[in-house]
Image (cartoon, rainbow, N blue to C red; front, side, top):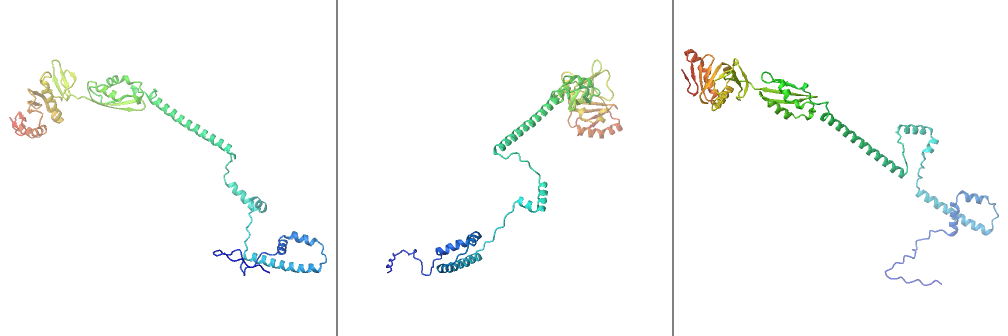
Length: 367
């Protein structure tokens, strides 16, 4: 008799019991044995073929028919699985050495491509060797940098010594070029003034000191200087130019526009007006005013002035070379006085007048 079925537990599904329409797919032990014998390949088949056939018994014939049916079913099942789930075989990769042995053309092409690629020598393969090589390269780089820095410093030191301390580019007085020294300043005076700089490297020559030394000379009004490589200096001076002659006990003193004594001569040079104003005491202001007026008038009129007299700085009087006297007054309104003088001189010559009063240029007088 069959045992009674177990009652189901509420809320719990009986998953262990198979459904009615499910059938076991696992073959019987005999079928699995037949399947394994079928998958064993040619080796098992060859072994069975090697065995000698024996006369089957009536029981064996029944078993063989059953096993043959099972083998046919297993074979059909394997064919069905292989036809539905066929996975294409992956192509096998052939190594380079196999291709070289099989394909001579590929070998030749491979050799040509290898020859075209630049070969980089492998210095080492181990980690310790690579670290040692890296340290050696770093030391080499540091040594090269030190050599470069040392070379640059050596060049700089050499250049500094060459231009700043050696005598190669030292000042040579024979290479000093002087211009502007003509009448009242000599070149020898200038060279004597800067003689202390000879032998000094040109880059260290104090041009300001040279300027002050040359400017201290008596008749030098201004001076400019520049270095002239490799070992010279160019000096340009502007001399003091006399504009008037002042009579003294012996000869005449030539004065420039700043009332500086340029030189002393026995006779007044032709073309310079003679200022008959003493150079001492309170007359110095009057003399300075007369020189200021001479600096403002044009050279054409300056050449026609024979002498200048004055009792005060507001009463300057010119005597022209044609004996006409011009009462100029002070140093104010010079341009207006010049314009009035140009218009009145022809009138005075026509009327034979010898005095033109310009002390009040807006009300000039001819007498």
